[in-house]
Image (tube, rainbow, N blue to C red):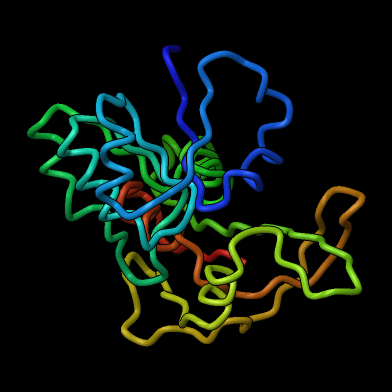
Length: 212
């Protein structure tokens, strides 16, 4: 590769995330500014990756279109439709790729759903995700704002080939699931996860889908 530019409002903190590669040539960490400053720093880039927050999805997608770069992010807003889809035609017209929800969950979970249901006439899909954090202090393993938004957002319900008008409450419909050790058997609850708004729109053989 030519150069990787890591942009963060706290460059010193950003260094802790790339300890294993910070000595590699072609990796630069710079301090984030407003969008105009970020655009100047990314001029000539071939790919923009948004690993910060979904609040930057649309601004960074528009920036990618402007500088003719491909785009990738890790998630969408917690609503009934991924907001990035409204820019799909703009990327297609410019011959650019925009890969959305491209993390672990969502992301890998979407790929596994397709792998497991491909070729089936129909499928009822249940996705269970376990996060196990033990601490005596208030701690969030990822973006605290996004975690709180996810925990408080109503959950879209996809059943019998369509979305129900009435959403479910977060942390409703408890269901026990047996994960591989060391997790074991735990109770999972409905949450507003991006898979519920993307998988049924791309995999047409999905009859119902839930994410807990």
